[in-house]
Image 1 (cartoon, rainbow, N blue to C red):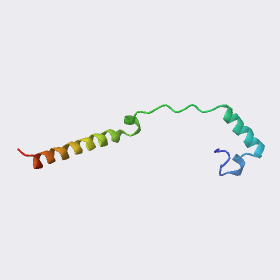
Image 2: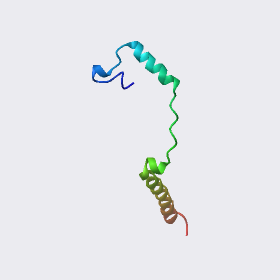
Image 3: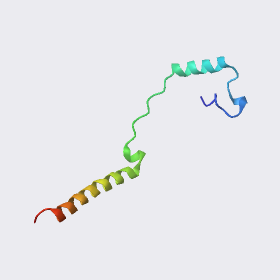
Length: 71
């Protein structure tokens, strides 16, 4: 696809038939599915965000318990 939309006309397909042949060759060789990447590798800050969210909920429950529950 990059060859079909290249900025320089000399880099593009010369004919539609050439493009069809390239597409057929590509369809015969399907791409492998990408492997799964752990969350810590994709977004290292996500673990900290999740931990902060859990701590925030715990703190809110603790404050509610301290202020509104009978002693």
